[in-house]
Structures are given as structure tokens and as C-alpha cells.
Length: 368
Image (cartoon, rainbow, N blue to C red; front, side, top):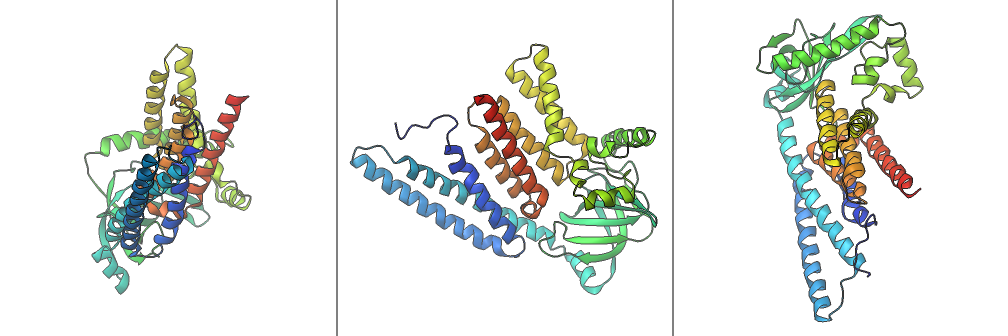
């Protein structure tokens, strides 16, 4: 019986979540050390080969002695193999992303202190802040895959969103290796929109967000509503924003797993009331989650929120007892491989902790 896996046991923690936490720490160090990806890849291959050799030797010994393999040993070897595979993926991703961040034109402009004109593809909706000095907006995007942050004076075009392309001229500044953006540009003059195939879809979604902001503006004291709903903090006055930062309440207006969980929970509850089965509820909830992400924009915090909500969806409707821990570990690995710079974001840690706590609460409620 010692080799039998019990549903909901700690097996998922050993084999998936524990390696993912270790990879998290490695990624947080590696992003600040350009060139470390190759060394991580070599170490991961070595660890994987050693684990495979040990697993083969132990398995052969147990078979010759006609005894069951030790459960703790198999879990530890499984965790090492998962960790080695995750580190190998991380190393490949690091090498590729570091190459993207070495944009020759932008590097040259930053080194010489010159301005540059570049075409930027936006990866998120514009952000802005209104103060006594006027409106200041920022745009996140990429220039030939190099991540960049653009600062502009005044309000951004309300039709811009993920997928929009703009042409901007301004001074270029290189950022530290651990920064999620490789460069910053302070725009000078007008920012030009470049027509593209996604303009109609982006404009439709951007207009829906703009209507929410306009509706909230007509209601006294509703400045926080767009932030709660779709993560748009532009209507928040400067004084209120400073007070929220001073009291550590800015997370309330950031889209988190709670927002996604509310959407998923509402769809799941409504479909259950109409007699939908478990699979139908999962499909409808997942579709609602995708639509919600499209509305609020696929930036890093939203991706975290959506994937963590997917973890809870798997825990609640997955049909496999104890599936939450493996799903959480897989989500952490997926997010880190997609963007290793997430490892240094406080929001990433908060999302993981909040999802783990939600899963623990769900298990306690099931036992009660």
C-alpha cells in the first residue's frame, strides 16, 4: 500500500509545485544576469541525466529484489525530472528573450543619447494619470520583439489597444537587465497610428472600455469602478491615487484572480441553474474568461489572473481530487517560461499565494 497514490495526497506538491518554486527562485536571479540561460540549460540537462540514471538503477535493483519501489524516492526523482525539464525550458526562453532585448538600433540610440523613430506594436491598453501638471500616458509594447515603454504627454488615442501599431519619435533610454522593459522612449511630438488588420476589433473593445469610464464619470464617487471592473485606473484623481498607495490599497483597482473568479463563478452558477452539466459549465466558464481577458487586455497582471482563475476552475470542476496543487505548479511554470521577468513582480507572488489560499479554503469546505 505504500506505493499507492491516494487522491488529494501531497504527491502533487512534491512532483510539480515544489520544482516550480525552485525554478521561480532561479528565474528571479537569472533575469538580472544576462547570459546565464546557457549555464542553466547545461545544469538542467546534467541533473536530468543523473536523475534518469539513478531512477533506472534503483528500479532495476527493486525489480531484482522483487520489492515495490520506495514512494518517497520515486516522488523525489519525479520532482527532479520535472524541475530539470522546467529549467531547460526556462533556459531556452531566457536565451531567446535576451536576444530580442538586444535591439541594435535602440541600443545604438541609447548609447549615443540620440532620438529614434520606431514602430511599436502595443501589448496592452494605454495607461494614464491626471495631475496638476496635466495628463501623462504610457504605452507598453514591442519593437521587433524588444519590450519597450513609451511615455507621451497628454491622453492616448482611445482607440488604441493590444495589437495597435504606432510610430513614435523620442529619446531612448536603456533599462537594467532585470526590468521588464528593455527600453523607454519619451515621445516628442505627435504619435502616429499605423493602420492594421486588427484595428476594427481593437477599437470595438476599446470603445466598450471607454463607455464604462464615461458612465462611471457621470456618477459621483465612482472613479474606482473602472479599476475594479477592467483595471482602468485613469479616472482616479491624483490625490486619491496617492492616498491608496500610502495605505497599500492599489491592489484593489488591479485586475486579479478575484475578478476572473467572479466572472467564472457567475457563469458557472448561472449555467448550473439552467441544468448544464459539468463539462458544459467548464466550457462556458472558460469562454467567459477568454472574453473577459480580451476586454481588459492581455498584459502581465491579466495573464496571471486568468491562469490562476484557470487553476481554480480545474480544482473546482476538474473531476480529479487533489488536482489543485499540480495545476498551481503547472501555472507557475507556464507563467515563468512565458515571461521569466514575472519572477520579480510582487503581483506574481501575491497571485500564487492567493490562489494557494483559495485552493486550501476549497479543500477545507469540502471536508466540512
